[in-house]
Image (cartoon, rainbow, N blue to C red; front, side):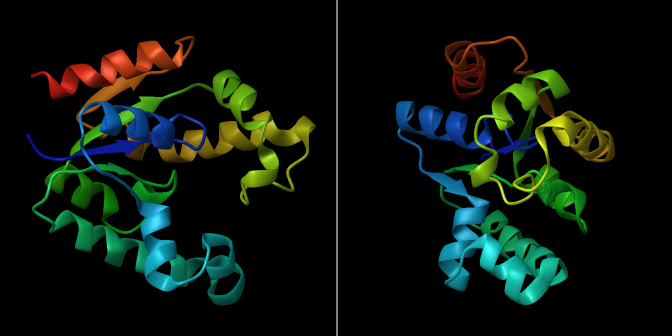
Length: 172
């Protein structure tokens, strides 16, 4: 089987599930944002602030291509916007088994409102406008996410239930 790439909106559980499943199957996890930060020597927030989103999206695609060429086994977790830009979703689909962790607006609102301060994209969005913000983004991004080969619905599921569902991919 190809390496797995977890896709979905922020708060859908990509990083958390990748880490848990990676540890349980002794498979390394690569978080694309962390990979970019290490490679560029600055945080994603700094890259956005100093060089802009267009620069970020270009290097994001460059590093995604680099990871797609690797032959070692790993689980990839990508940023919520990664599939939307350039030909990233096509690259992901051709190089990885793509898994969309689908969460609806109420689920995402519940998860994201707890830690807005650590999310640059929503840090300045008021609690009153957060659900609308998430809904708008989700509407724009869903057509890309839906191109994933596998869909795991994470709504109304415990972390353990989502882990068990994702684990089945490694037992095939």
